[in-house]
Length: 419
Image 1: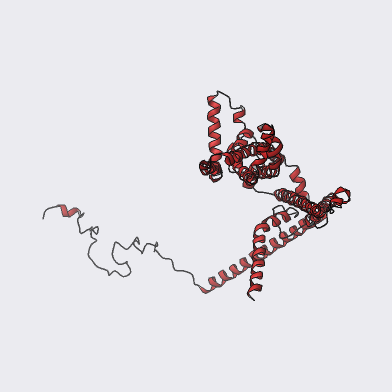
Image 2: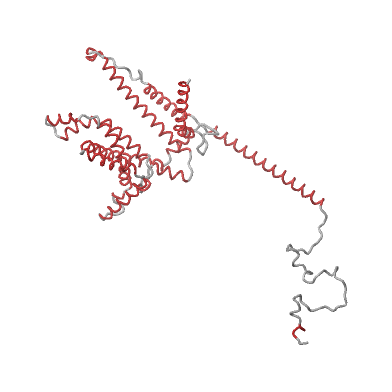
């Protein structure tokens, strides 16, 4: 019972994990095929490929992709070269200094990209001024600054990949080559470099992807050469369209395709090596039959299926016209808007009639109001307030009117005369 519960828990965790990891990518990919002007999956309107067409006509996005490819290529060359040099130095340096050297080399990974971008910009600007160069010099070029800024930390990633491969290298091979008369350059080029080739390829791919998606460092150094991430960030500020989803779908599709292709290649190599190990000497002489490309290689089958699906989608996109579906959706939206407006008008008319009926009932129940001199200040400023009671309640007397102004006779004209 406990074993079954554990397996169910593991599968549930894996499902939740992959939904959390891949769910947003799937949703964004689906929005690229919805005719809605805003990226959304529901409500679904019409199947369309217009956003791919708009993507390929967006010059800013195309220019950003071009700049990203150029910067990525420069970053790969510089980062892999520095990473390989750092890895070789790490394996040959005095053992007591390896820990300190390793810490210094890994430090750029721990520094925020914003700090690296600002420091790169400030440092090379000072160098440019010291050399007396202008603002249009190579040291102020956005491509140069971006490649330098990104390579400062991407080279550390490359070094980690290369060190992992270099730790399995047998130094005796290089020593044997040197004993046989080879120079250090020949030993490096003909022995060490072929051994490091798979790691160099992996480091190059890692460096290119890290450069392609970098934003924090690039935002301070790109100058007049904005990359794809910079263009996307600027578009998001002013509202996005599903053409961004189309770009995301293309990137995801290419990533999946090349990942499957690499997995199929590795699986093919494993099958060939296993077949050769099991083969006899006679079979190796010419009768060996290596396994086919698809035999026991699920990744190769998925690559073919992926390619067929891509061709089918492209063919459908060229023949499918969603104009009628889009027109029907717009007409339906127009009718819904008119119906909603009519409902609001009826609701306001009913509220107006109800309000008039309530006012009529209140007017019939109340009598005409008696005019009042009350000004709303507690009858303080009523005309008869300072003179005592009103004329209707004040008794008649023969006493002549007094000139007392209500201030204790202080202002009586006779009060100033002596008795």
